[in-house]
Length: 84
Image 1 (spheres, rainbow, N blue to C red):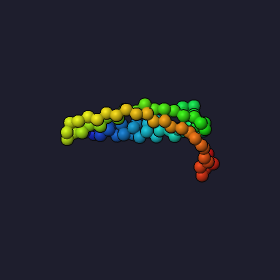
Image 2 (tube, rainbow, N blue to C red; image 1 turned 90 degrees about the horizontal axis):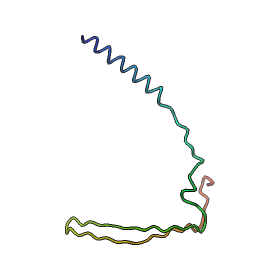
Image 3 (cartoon, rainbow, N blue to C red; image 1 turned 60 degrees about the vertical axis):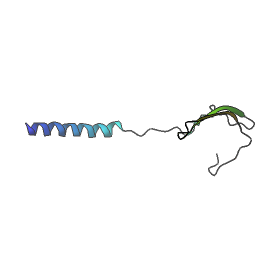
Image 4 (cartoon, one colour; image 1 turned 180 degrees about the vertical axis):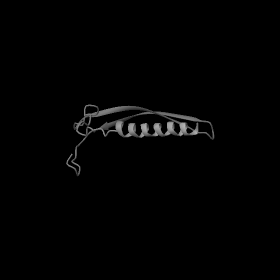
């Protein structure tokens, strides 16, 4: 009985190892597509975010809430070391 159990575990181990090497394949990553349409990188483009911040003080039990806006402006471009 014990030999049969070892045989089943051995077969399972072989099957697992073969499937691991068979199904693991390197994927080709697309590095050219950087999704520029999601956040346009045009000089002069701007976007305003509505922000709400909530701070909980566990010691006093107070809750402080503040609301404000952040404006991001794409005001210039630059070339990095890799030429992008």
